[in-house]
Every structure is written in structure tokens, then in C-alpha cells.
Image (cartoon, rainbow, N blue to C red; front, side):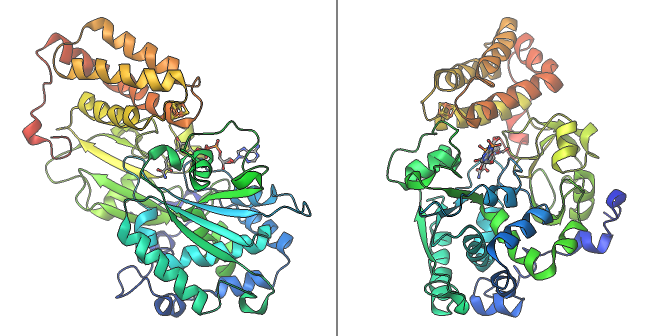
Length: 440
Ligand code: L3W
Ligand code: SF4
């Protein structure tokens, strides 16, 4: 794990965490602990700048959205019109529910003040007096912790009226969703926050123009906003010294599946899975990597041949996938790929909001075919049918959930078509489910 170094990133920096620096300390989530670790110092620097200069600073730092799409954060803030006489809103997308994705919830649990400080900075920049945190509703302990952190921030003068004497007034509402994956799509999230059934809206207009209550709204991922205080505190050049020119900075990678030590690994963008596995003890003993996802189940899967792909937006994109949420789910040779894809597709079919036909109907039929193949009742023509249905969903659905559902079908057929055929020509699944710890 020592040589990331095509971009001049030193091994020390590689291992120096920022967001997760003190997660292991007792009561890491309290304001007192956060302040002992430079907490709310970035905010002081931000408030000394003019809002437009602050936006330019974050834009210059090159921070890209950590929720999956990698859109430049500063640019998103800049889209908010000024002098329009309308309220502006910041909405933090904490509805983390993509299979394999598990970085925002631990971050909120262990270090909620990094998010709150980032929210104050962002709201100062976009001239917003009201922010919302839309949290996945099932994680009740995190909800409680967020409420407590917000309460602490009000009591210390980091939220409320005239924050740190700057003239900025800001309120934060923590809202728990009701457990629908689609509410992580930014416009469905806004509908849900407004009290309606969460279904994606047509874009454009993007939320920056007409978002919450039809007012200009920035929707950012938890990790994006929580990364801002450190950029202000330590400087944009420090941030840009990590990662690559187009994908600068540090980020959280979530290792899961058949690995010796699953968990969050904070590292500069551009690290490879091989390096992360070297650092973390590798694939479980006696086994070898079969396939993995770079960014959750919606991103096309990779195999062993992609172990040295730089995990940044350009590197993963050039190799035919997406960085997504950096959820590195690793599967060893005991895993049936058809079974894994069936489970994911069942998830998408269940979570499809039903608004558009290709996704609503297509995911249903994909599940039927996959279950048949997995049970040894498939026909060879089913493989082409899977491909055809995925093709009808991909790019023809109303939102990214459809594309996400098609992606594991395409990539598994690309790398493991023979395994599908084996299920059909043999008598079903050639794998012993008893030996699979993930999918049994
Ligand atoms: C103003 C324009 N704003 C784009 C904004 C837009 C959004 C951001 C990115 O999906 C992906 C998806 C999942 N004027 C703009 C503009 N924007 N053009 O930029 O937009 P977009 O459409 O590229 O992506 P998205 O709709 O935000 C996110 C993938 O992430 N993903 C997601 C996983 C799930 C989770 C979770 O569970 N928490 O993150 C994983 O790969 O498939 O492709 O804000 O408004 N002209
Ligand atoms: Fe709903 Fe799926 Fe269509 Fe998205 S793609 S709008 S989730 S039916």
C-alpha cells in the first residue's frame, strides 16, 4: 500500500485520515471532541470571506460530489441565483441506501459535526437561512445522534441567529425518510421532503433553479458537505495535493464482502483496490477475488483484471464503469454471479417507484428470468432476453435507478456469460450455497 504515486501523493498522506481521523476516540460525536480536532475553525475562515469568494474557493479546490455523480460542488453552489428575492435552501442527501454503500451513515454516527460545520459554510456561501438533512429513516440511532449534534451546535452559537457574530441566521431541520431507495434521487427526495410521495421530477429545471418549494436549492451528499470544513481549514492547495488534477482530494472507500477487514478506508482519490486490499489484509484467507463493484451495485462490475484501475472518476470511467459511491463490494470464487445479480435486481424491482414503464416492467421481467436461470429452468434464449430487456431500460428510463438496474446485467454478461450458460446447460446453480457467506 505504498505507492500510489503517479500524482505525487506520498504514502503518509495516503494513510492520514481527515473525516475518520478520530472515529475511534470515546464520544467522537460530541462537540467537545470535534472542537479538540480543529472543529469549526474552517467555518471561522469561511465567514471571513465574501460569499462569492468562498464559492470560488471551493470551486477552485476541485471538490466533486461524493454521492455518485461527481458533479463539482462549487459549481453547484454557483448555480444558485443571487438577488432573486426567493429563499434558498440547502438539502443534504443522507438517504444512503445503494447496495454496498455504507459511508455516510458511519460518518454521521461518528462525526456529525463535520456535516453541521459544512452546512453552515455552504449556507453562508449560497445565502441560505434554512437547511434540511434528509436521513434514511431506518437508522434511528443516527437520527438521535444528529438531533443531539444539532442541539449542541445551536447551544454553542454555530446555528441559529447571527452565527459567530457574522450576521448569518441559519436553521437546520433533520428529517427522517420512510425507507424508499428512490428518495435518494435528488428530486424524489425534494418531493418527499415536501410531504408528497417520492418520485423523480423532470429535470431541467434542476434543483439549483427550482428545487424545494420551487426555490433555488442545493442538494449535496453528506460526504461532500462534510469535506468542506477541512478544505477551508487546511487550504485548497493541501486538498489538491491529493488525488489527481480532475479528481483531487481524499474520500471514503467502503470495503465489504469477502475481505479480511471490511470497513471504511479513507484515502486520496486514485488509490487502487489492490492497494486498499494490501492495506487491509486482502481477500479472506484461502480465496481469490472473482468480481467487485467500484461504486455500489449500480456501477458496472469489475474483475481481477481491474485491480490496478485508479479509483477516481476518470480512471474508473476509462475502464468502463463509474466511481459512484466508492462502495467496493468484493466477491470471491465461491460466489455465484447469477445469484448476486438476481439479488441486486430483486432490490431494484422492489425499489422501482413505478413512474416509468421501462424500469417498472423491465425490472420485474429481469427478476423472473434470473430466478429461472438460477433455478436451472432457464433457456439459452433467456440470455439474449436479459440483454434486450436491460437495453430497453438503459437510457430510456426516467431516472438513474433504471440505468443502475441494467448495469449489473450488462457487466455480468460481459465477464461471466459462460456462468449463465452453465446454469442453463447443467442442472441449475453449480455453486454450493452453503459455502457462500454472502448470498446463502
Ligand atoms: C444545474 C445543470 N445542476 C447536473 C446537478 C444535478 C445533481 C448533480 C449530478 O445521480 C448518480 C446516479 C446513480 N444545472 C446540472 C445540474 N446538475 N447538471 O449535478 O447530476 P447527475 O444527473 O449527473 O446525477 P444524479 O441524478 O445526482 C447520482 C449513482 O449516482 N449512484 C448512486 C448511488 C446511490 C446513493 C445512495 O444510496 N446514497 O448515492 C451510484 O453509482 O446511479 O448515476 O445534483 O442537479 N445543468
Ligand atoms: Fe421510477 Fe424506475 Fe422510472 Fe426512476 S427509472 S422514475 S425509479 S420507475
